Image 1 (cartoon, one colour):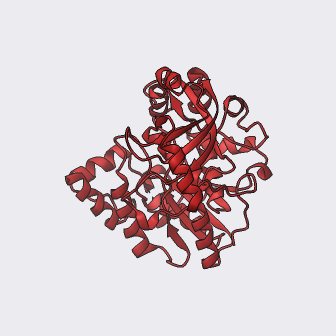
Image 2 (cartoon, rainbow, N blue to C red):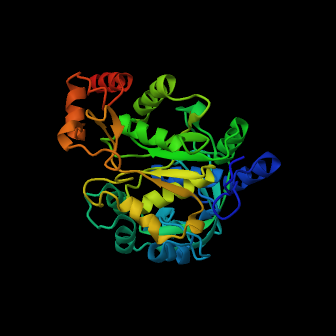
Image 3 (cartoon, one colour):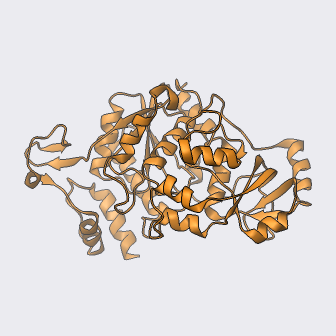
Length: 385
């Protein structure tokens, strides 16, 4: 069994079953409904399975401001990004003084959950944007999503009838309880988690395998919730992961499971949030690379690593593993980083993202020192489609 407790000590389970589910469903049919956005559906799913433990629903205004101001919940537990359920003015008026509301994915669809409403409070968009994203610039995708969300938040505890339905990656959709059970089955006591929303290239593979030298197992945990329109689609990324795992990873020491969260692109704050979530999935260690969860030039190259210094190790309870930019060095004849390689930039294989995309669009494989050929071929085919 992994040697790490869930955040806050208890793995939350909000799914209701059996006769209790039947009773709750009948109640939900007679409640006012609230349509949940795609991004907040991901949070609903994460809450339901305990990925956001110790949260048992959407927190209230006091926790909202505490997170924005201190990166802690009111009870003192570290938490870096508020988890909110948005509603506009009309929606808030329609809910009125309801004690409970049924959450649905679309108008007329079956209820997914019942929220026992404790309060409806006004969102502070400027404060949230500055605290979470470090900017109010609407060119930032996280700020734009925040601007598009309702300006009020509904708080309360959740009782989940069913998770949002998915037809993709069914074999890879493991809950925190299931990943923990799988780690135990494999005999892994220490596990390193790796967050990704991109195909894995040689630099990623290198840092994963460096980390794997000091732990029992590796969980590659790709995010499959909402991302930017120009990010590589999840199904393409998953084919890349499968090709890599088939040819280059020890099957008894590495596994893939999907992470249902939506991307915030919050850089440092999201690095902390990602680490806490992976702790709930049973990871004892978490890789934090260059520009983790970053976008554009809103964050410094290693800001996502520096933010961990603001917490005592015992506070977060998961060990961050910090890595610098990695590359192939022709002189070293292998993968390296600035910590291990003394040679000049000219002797290193380094390609910009723009150059790589250009090569793939032209049907040209990037150098194998940059990307495994199996991965390049999948990306070339996807770009042709």
